[in-house]
Image 1 (cartoon, one colour):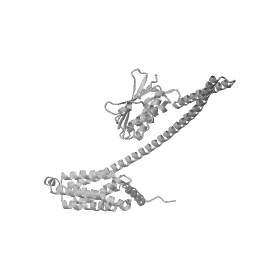
Image 2: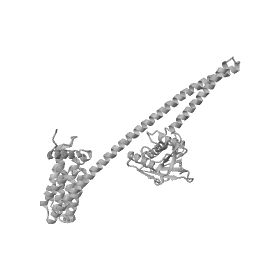
Image 3: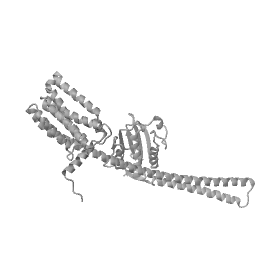
Image 4: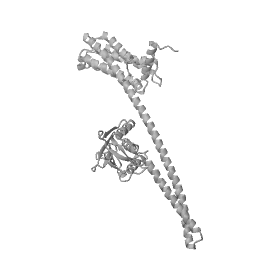
Length: 449
């Protein structure tokens, strides 16, 4: 049985985890040689302006020579890190120490500017010190479990205290030290929680997409099964029609050449059997179609269903603002063949199409409204968006499968939605809004209470 890790081992592991936080493209880009050169040029320009420009010089009275020497620790640590990681090397233990040295050196430099300047210029550098601490806390994910950078910031400010211009500067740094540490911890903790929320959202989105894919696969299987049945019916009907046509031709020939005993009755019976077989196949097809739709229409409450669908679609399109305008106290209910399953599929198709737009530009806002029509016997479900809308030529044609405005679309979503709505005694209308975007209106029979 292994013994629990001691304090030094726990610190080493925490430091290793904290170092790996910086192993990302954003940090590498900010710590590259080009960024190091840009910072050096910026600091040189800052010291030149504050030390030589007449109006600014009196505001700070900053000794440029001493301030330049205070920048050397940050310059050397950042330069060492940038040149060490110019290639594709992974971050290691030395990288963590160089990161601490760089951040600590920058904090020491800004703290030294605060210490060396006179008021009110010292307040300006104190604000910069707080801003730098907050930025470092966020980028380096400083938390109470990984407080290394906050401790280095306190040490950097402590090292700058001997450089203070007078007692007022020293008191200012005493006040800024805990504030900067708290800013680093709070911003780092917020960034970690944000990372966790984004990771959870990604997992939920992946799970929803996986579930959606399973449902699509099941729908494809159902469609394939229906097609196989239709093809088998088509084959049987074709064979039966050929038999009936042959019998009819032979009966015609007998009528012209004179009947033969018993043959006409046999052919007539074959023709009758063929026609009855065709009628049975047609009845089977109708029964299959009715079973696919789901039998008689069922009442479905709109508001809770719309909330559920909009939430699920929102996981797939997090950048689209989807809103629902419906009465939730006394939600309107409609009749739909297949019940809530069919209506959910209709609404999901309409909102998804609005979010996707024409495949190259989608909507950023989608609104779903529920209202009664003027008679009160039907309910209108209107989906509007601010996307590209429908091409004018598409609005002149009926909705058909295998026709879509999206480059890789099939058009089956809108086609299926219209088929389900019409099968329920409703209607689906398309239009473009006056200010742009698409407008889709679904009208369904209302359940009267």
